[in-house]
Length: 140
Picture 1 (cartoon, one colour):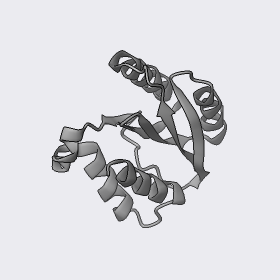
Picture 2: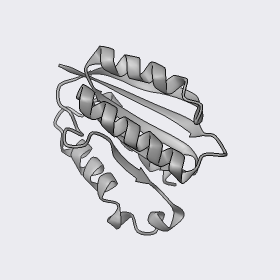
Picture 3: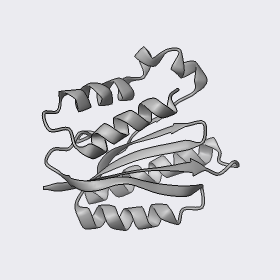
């Protein structure tokens, strides 16, 4: 039995591409070392992330995320147990969604894979349903 957590936050106005790259590099390394999987979306200063792994590890990671100065107002949307990981092959899937991408959603592989994955899971968890809903919301 695993654990999943979903949260959203707002990036600081001064966030740079280098900051995003640093976040991803750190997350992927940490996640690989701690058997964490998930997906991070970034669009118009909004972060949306879902994390999957062992409960205590995810909760400790979320404490660190809460004090990261590169974003504000981290809001826990859902946490709970899960039977099956949706992102088992991604230590941290990521997509920075730009306005041009919105016109070409068919080219956004991670979102298409996530969307089809959630709808194909027999027992889609509340977090996965929320992640899908909020990902579609920030794209509008």
